Image (tube, rainbow, N blue to C red; front, side, top):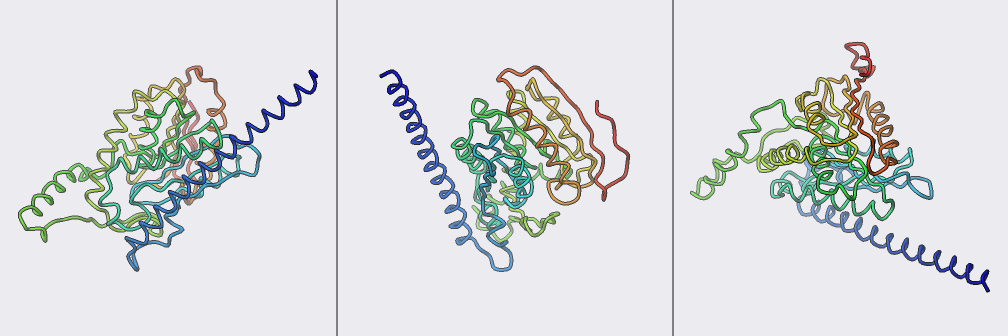
Length: 339
């Protein structure tokens, strides 16, 4: 009788586990399908011939590793005016390493500038939270990883969702930007609103030209209302730094042409995390997650996640600064020893 009871208990446990897995799969499929429908609907509504990129550029993606259980889950967030394709190569590298990856589409991106112009930043952030919910159906170990403004959103998420996350990675996040004109954008948007109210809407300045590194991904027009939201996100992420306690990796390009290189070290210094790491890559561009030298960035992220996702809840304090040499095409100075 004891043996039969044990066998029935084991079978019952397996059935309950199977039921849970099936429920999680249904939830995951529903959330992914919702994201895909939102993109397809927005793309059809805002599509501009000759300007909108192909749909595969803006479509969010879920990558599952070839293993029974992933090592963890990573939510990837792209940058301002960009699209999920920007982080696809990083996602594929992490998936090959054994991680489940969800590349989110920030609301208003990957379609047309007019779509982005009407989106408050809270909708960008909501895209990130849905990504977390999707990966939670696959693994209890979830990390946020964002590039550029996606890095700022990841830091905000690390503050707000600390009990649901295991780590955060921020790559070239803009605490400061090279072009200080961006600080004037809120005032310009306010003037535009006033001109509209007094019937002088034809004099409004609503879009600025954009000259991105990856023209096959990014918008070529920048809605000023979206730039106003960008400024708000930067400020919100800075306020969040002192409340972030999960393991964090901050990556910065030494000669970033868009984000001021002081951003990375200053983010690092303000983090409250007991385990935090800063890596400076010798690069003379902003988009270091694509092109020459990107493999080294991917390897650094993978190395960090391999440790951080398996740390105890209260890890020992570690503050690590490393500097990486330039990629072959970017060589200007020799490697600097790690401190």
